[in-house]
Length: 377
Image (cartoon, rainbow, N blue to C red; front, side, top):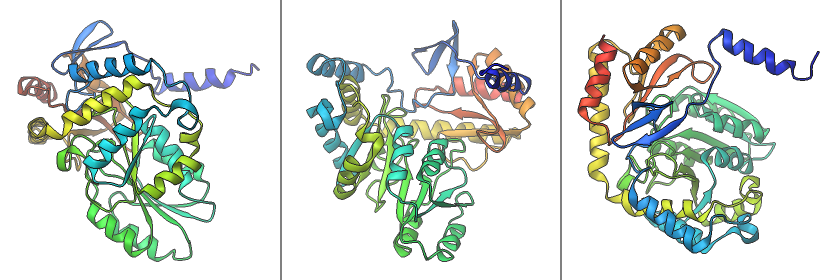
């Protein structure tokens, strides 16, 4: 027996069930398109919802910051990596979101897996939505405390669980504002009310709402009394990194106690430059947000009219729920043959197989019509 037999066995298993993931060579092109393994395709799998990832202002600001501060931050922020541009960007975002403070993290995954364990101890209780993202699930696992799963977006069930477990001194409710695989939304106002009545900490992941929804694109939690919000700059903001929005007290606590912040090298200045530019642009992109939502509504209705199930989607994320894995793979292949990049998502990532479509403000109606025609055929 080889010590790496387990690798061979797992990869062979994935080959049999057609779950062996491979990387594709991608080069972005204008107009919501990409070059995929040397072939131009219309991209309906990207999270670049506002088309900012190739925006010249982000590129120019990234270059300016890199020229001023260098190509790397050199250390963690608690050593020498807290360049003064961090504080300026954090203050800018705090003003836009109307929160006391912002703390920038290197990625949304890093924030979720490290902030969640920092907010609880072994005697705490975490209540998590059934369809929360993998990064949240990992964060809860690392917390090593009791957890309860409430039915997806079923806040009556959440209340029932809270009422039945009053003995915990610390309770943490964890959910997403826009769910990454289903495109539906949480009721933030009711979650705030429930957290207040049961003295629970409310933690909301805004990765897929930041830039797209809420006042000025600042998310569904903006101007609302949510204790901890995690958002990303890597989707609608067109760059990279993440943030935690909270009170100044929580920020101070995370700087001192959150391992994912304390023990990692800070983001490079070029990334901060791109974020800074995005924060200048996004609040004034209401027209692009309207186009994005109009595109999404048009595609949802078109798919539903020809008999497809798009679940509870109300946003730019539209799952085409096919259920059967082989049918989902065949549909993805047909879409690829027709020149569309539309990724199949299957168990165990999601409970049922689907084509996950993501819209951009850069998509044209002609591109969307052509996509619908493939589904119709």
